[in-house]
Amino acid sequence: MKALLSLLLLLPTVFFGQNDSTGVDEEVPQKLPPMRMLSGEGEAQNFFELEYEADYQVFDQMGALVEEGHGEFIDYTDYEGGTYFVSYDDKTQFFKHTPPEKSYFIYFMIGGIILVLIIGVLILREVRFRAIHNNLVLELEAQKKKISEVNLSELEEKNQPTLDKKRIELAMESQLNESDWRILNALVEEPSLSNKALAVEVALSIEGTRSSLKKMYRLLEIPSSRNMRLNLVMAVLRISKNIS
Image (cartoon, rainbow, N blue to C red; front, side, top):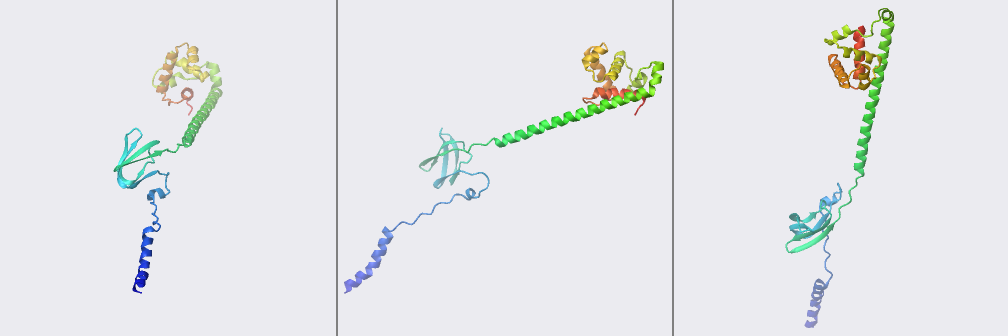
């Protein structure tokens, strides 16, 4: 009877001990990646996980040291494409990295926008210049017509030129030589003459014509622009007839 009671007392111990030694192993929890991998901010990052936290070194496929440090995760997001070897303690592991292809669409878009803006600015400058040029031509014709109407009888009787040389010289505070005078009269008749055509008209070299124009621009303080010749003609006409 005592032997039977002892056997009954030992049965739970035997069964429980057998469960502890032969039962299913407990499931090992999976390691979570670093929080910055889960943040969802910015571009995706790539990490290589070591078996445990340790001092490590990363080499490329040519054997060159790429990175070294201490930790459990290696961020290889910015690595160039290729195979890399990780050495820590007495272990060596490797991984391959294929970086995503870069999209150049945004660069083409930015370049296209800049090109369109440049072309637009150039077109606007040309339109503005044409408008200023046309206004000066119209104003010049109006001034010439006004002078002709006011002094028509006087010009017919005395055969005087349209320009007043003395007034122009007084305004310039300098005397006009014969070449300067011929150039001014030629420009009053046809302001659009090129330097070459103007030089032929006044029987002067192109360089001499250019030099004479520069002198008169300076003396009459004609501002630098693409319409300097028209502005010069307008200035001498106003001076000649004292028109404001």
